[in-house]
Image (tube, rainbow, N blue to C red):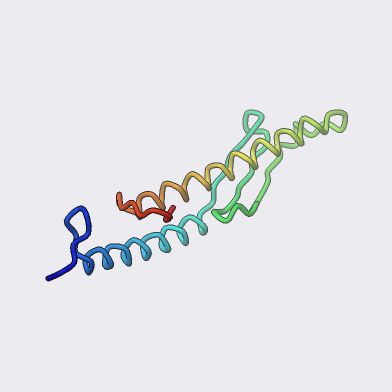
Length: 110
């Protein structure tokens, strides 16, 4: 007789499902880390691109917004753009992991 887990699954089926979920989560993580996420600030005057590992890949600054008398504004736009791009990368990872879990809820696992 196979051991049953609450919800009607036997132990073997549960282990296979967990293994598949782990493989899916690893695949999703690799895909997200290899992807780029961009965000802009100041109406597109500044754009930042990060990868899924939250590493800045590029920053583009419209030369028209470079004002030596107002460096703080440029710094603020850079911060906004980088933080938004990082938020998008984090959100993509969270959604991917949730999808990979396939509704399976295991205490202590994300």
